[in-house]
Image 1: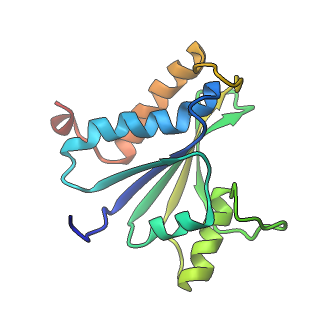
Image 2: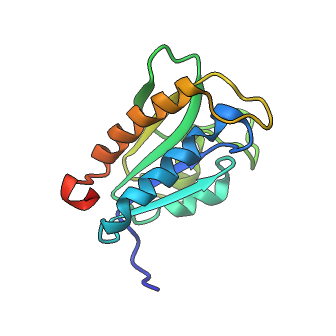
Length: 158
């Protein structure tokens, strides 16, 4: 196994057993399937939530894409830049992307790589539910955007 870190990281989180909360992990899994031919430029990770330990996953990256389900969006997905921000009530579980970048900054004494949040519209979070039809349609649109973000070309996908 190579000790080389992939320059691009896509990190999605959510609970696959809670309806639309599965959107982050689903996008990452689908993108990982498309990226098999990306010459090791892209690493895909999923978890149930962001934790302080994930700051270590940012080391050596050129860019990072965070992916999560989002309540209240009026559009299929939204993209925003993530910047470090301290958290008023610090806990070691369920960090926001901004808090995770602050952990990275404090730990590494350096600025984190450029990070983007891809939030996918979500509505249903009931335990045992599958993602809804609208959520899956929004996921497909978000996946197309993420594919372009990762620089996956048509030649790589065929």
